[in-house]
Image (cartoon, rainbow, N blue to C red):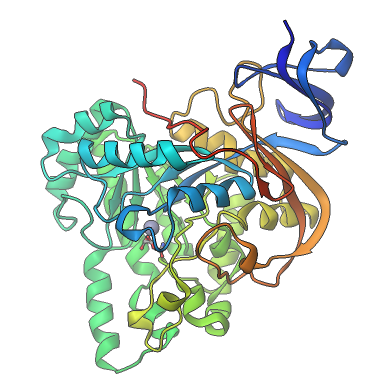
Length: 447
Ligand code: NCD
Ligand code: ZN
């Protein structure tokens, strides 16, 4: 019996190095990685023309929206954007309308995604109103909980550390992580009131209202709770030097913490925010050059666990408004992450090994995504083929995402995802989505 597919003439990144080989896929999984003569006969053969072949990206920070926010993004447009960007699995954030915060709302989102998605989708839940519901949310399949320290999303009072500890203890028993948006609500509220009183409406006022201290303070508070409860805490989008220091202190003390940074916090700073105004507005805000340097330094020393897009789509009308206080924060990133990072690789600031570790291997490990995150026999065939020499300009008008704007618009990049395979199926070919909606998997937590 021939196997389903053989990809041949590839440069495959496997076990820490690039090998010239082919890859046999059967039943959605990688059956064999070997020289072509040692691969089994296949129903379909595809020549990858010597292109670099990497594990598909696992993006742990994606807002796919849908439901009442479908005008910003839905499971079709969001996962098409993922496929176009070489992302084979997205973990969906819970700040939806309605908020994902119990097994019913989670099941509803899974049902919607199941019919529409073209890449694999896993889900976060916010904390429920009643903590007794934590186990049922996990058994329904949530991969992790998401906690916003910046505002109340879900059932928890974020100012109440005692309650947060109870919640963390419950989650610790279930063995899933808690991802945290670390900006302290009280600091944000005080600073914002101060800024609004001055009558300022500019983006710099917004940044002043969300200072790095708010990030550092929230990280310190949560790190203590991580230690006390033993729950694995993943800090989302760490953006500032002092936030990073708070994180590194906790990590060095052996607290169970990991963190991610975003491409926009690595590649943009407050100067870009001044130039692109509300289009580049995001939470936490873009920081100073000094903060950017600190993030890169930590990344090069191996202290950053993951890179995540924080794909946060809004309409252009919601972004381009007069007063910064009316603007929606968030930048779409699914279609720019890999090209931007490949450009960093081509310019020598990142290695392919760094890229794969930060965008696939570690996210799979942190979120317990079994048999994913690296190209190895037995794993799911979640693959992205890249043309590392292709030069082009980012053009947000071509995005599959409904959010057709980007602070990276017009940037010259080198490196393009040309084919994306999800569970062994070709879903994106030369920028075209070629899979039927609903062909991917809903990835559920399995105990
Ligand atoms: C997020 C969104 O739009 O959902 N926006 C963002 O700037 N990252 C929500 C949030 O994290 O504030
Ligand atoms: Zn966030």
